[in-house]
Length: 83
Image (tube, rainbow, N blue to C red; front, side, top):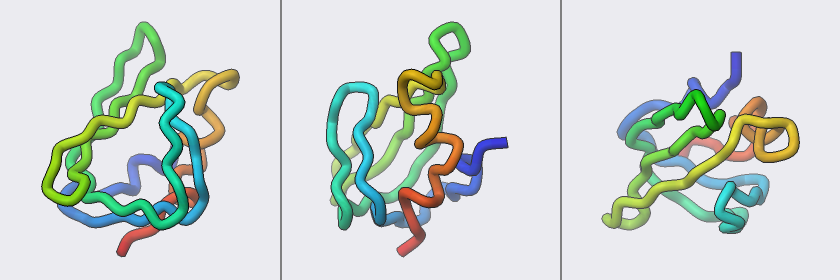
């Protein structure tokens, strides 16, 4: 079970290990956001993270495949920490 499920709605998180999402957007160390929810897209192994960046809704897309972001998703709590 991947630890992305450890994220809690309404909690703020800080990136502590930089990562790049499916859309090639870099999430640098220090980036903070409030977690809202995730949605899984089974036929593409896609996971959408819905967050609030300083009062603006945002979507981070990741793909749960070895050649994409599976390593990040499987160890997500090593990339972010609760604020």
